[in-house]
Figure (tube, rainbow, N blue to C red):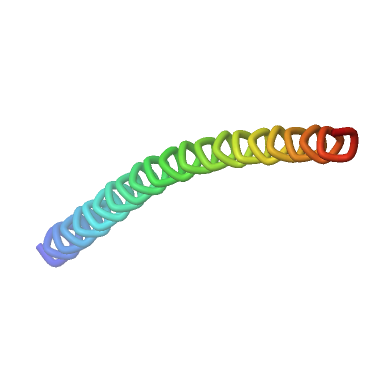
Length: 77
């Protein structure tokens, strides 16, 4: 009888440990999913900022070219 009680107690402990492990794995999976979504959002933001920076760089280059042309026209007029 003692062995059966001990075996039942050990089984319950093992079940609790298993449930804790499942809960921990679920929590970790949820964290991974949340972090993956955040990473995607950050990557999209970075891409948008890079495109915006390229556009601004092109606008600055075009403005510089126009300024140079205007300076040349002023010299020769």
